[in-house]
Length: 297
Image (cartoon, rainbow, N blue to C red):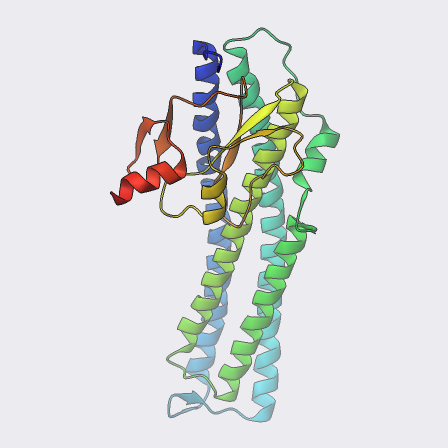
């Protein structure tokens, strides 16, 4: 028979889910600074291309350059691309480190705050050594900084390929702006995917560290109730795991994963309610599959 949840325990779970969602949204402003820098660099490249269109010979909507002109312009545009990507790498590395550090500390602090609402205990903080370990944790053996470098390197290569084709007359002058913007859309998507996925990883790691420090023994896997949730997360939703279970699914389970592990006051407990992200309202407790069946009926 499950133990009755106290008012304070219910509050702990409700606030855990509330603050988890809040931490995701708070980082959007910082991510927007990344996009502003990317847009500036994209526009700088397009401005240089516009100068070429105004000063160079065009035949049948294609550039018609001499070999010497192509080499000079290719080198110039290549340097602009290199400078742009280097600035993005430095800027995004600093912003991501700040985001992940804030995420780790805020997740730990919110757990402290929520727990203190119903329990007297000594407040603790994340040691610098633990913070550094959490921030620099790996996904599939790769650090976030390695993934960022790889993404930027790939974008630089792709931009240079398109610029070379443009200068050779293989890309219509009317299409080059769209080509560059498409590549930069990919650039923004790569960054957004990396940041969102790493935020989930750091939240999970910070939450696990806090749970072990406060003798939490079980955690409940909770997916997001909407149509975007992956089959993998749907399958785990509502399941309870021992905190040291080696088979415990620890978010992120995939890019853009929004699932989380909720610390439980006792093993047999389920929340009274959860948030329906599809219909934007709180509903009585249900698993993902039960919720989905109700949506389809």
